[in-house]
Amino acid sequence: MGSWGVRLMKLKGMAGTLRALGDMEAEIEERIERNELALSEASGEAQQERLEEKDQWLMDTLMEVEEVIDALKDVFDSKMEDD
Image (cartoon, rainbow, N blue to C red):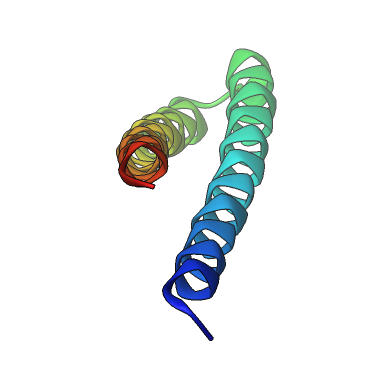
């Protein structure tokens, strides 16, 4: 396989990774919405505290996924410019 074939395979791999991360981002956003709904319906203080911790963890995870997506997009864009 020539150098163009190798580059194409790498770009396809990065594109697949970006799609998977986008799906993960959407799933996390849905989980945040469900958690916030549960939080609004929580009756006990302990339950509310646990849901707040879960919400914070989900928000942190979402931010990390978004950072990875942005970094991969930058790499993808730079690879496209190099070719």
